[in-house]
Image 1 (tube, helix red, strand yellow):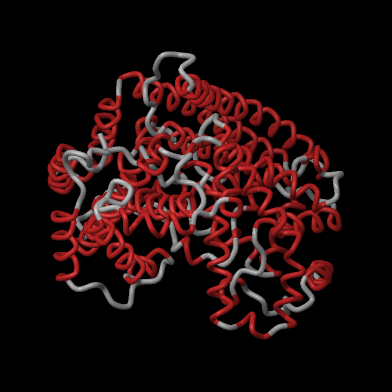
Image 2 (cartoon, chains in turn yellow, purple):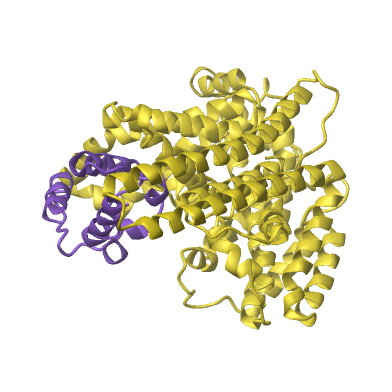
Length: 504
Length: 76
């Protein structure tokens, strides 16, 4: 079941009523029950895998917590009797013991994740006949593994109630699609008792409407065109392929950020704050900026738990700093690629990001000199140029996921020059009544919705953490709901119910 | 603290670290530069930076914040 389902929305309304009428101490158990139910609908095997993961992680975290308490007590008791070196040696030995437990826990989680991902890859090439859809497994694995690492680092208190830990892991609004929340960011809000806050509830509803607008008016509509365009890759090369890549970017943003809007909005209606995952990514000035704006919680997860630990890891310490950074960057992006799936397109996508980041990093001093020398680099026009350049670059990198075929994607890149098909591309629109399986009116609706998306600044400000200066009037929301009912994509031909990012 | 200021001024000669505060002046370094800074600090102060502190911006808001962290790590 996804957010776009009458059953889900009906159940959600009942849940809101129960949540705010039952005694407050029943709030988090109610959310846990709802989340378990939500997962059970995805299949009992999916629910069982999740419960086993939570149980193992709970045990590991509790044991690390006990070791930490004993370590602190020992140091406090013998502080005066120990020299600084003795204390350091004792702490290091204790840390090693805790690290063994951490590694065991992470190995268990990631073996399970790898098993599922490899089975999915084998099912894709029909080596094994079929595979259950372990919906959202990467998201909860990363959430709970992040918690384990934070416990090891001493950044969070151990959660002694396994049921509360289970709720953090699979809270249904973010269970399937993210954000990849951190325990210390959401635990208080998620597990605390909440009074009805009408303002927050209203803003949550607005956020949900905004998400539906993105997903149902833009996302699902553009997906029909994408499916047509990628069904005939040989025919649609050159400008057609470039057009496909642009439409793919718009689709992916509308689909993924829309789903996240719904996710964040539902959490807000329960009085719960979860992390933002997008901040106007197409306004990024360079690739670093882009990854601080797109799928933010994934980026920070890999930065904090893979890139930083690798970059200060002992085996790399003797290397020159820049080499160390580049190795850590490549490994981080390779891992990010694999996180999406065991397939060449994801691996090449990850490595392409890593290589562009490495090159950009090396060019930074050159850019700094260039920017200092030429004053036009401070102009708005130059900013627009930088934004456009980044947009095009990321459009190319992102396109590896369109066809799931790396050589084909490279052939399409080459066709921009060898066979651009300019004439054929522009003639296509005059010669056909339906453009890539979508009527011109459908394109107009999607195009106008994209304009609304660009023009409405309210959530952009909210995402930055500033209180919006002016909220949209009620009529705006009424019109948006009306637009979703009229132009939302339902029924025959529009039966795509899964978000692209749910497969991860 | 003087030793730290010396290092910061070498790495970022255009910034006045006596007054710099990232919360007011905007972030100076991102994740890749963070590794460069930490490698330098580790070498000069002979301490080990645990990766756990690297993702916490509050440790790097200002020279004083970095110094407080170094003192804490030296004591551990």
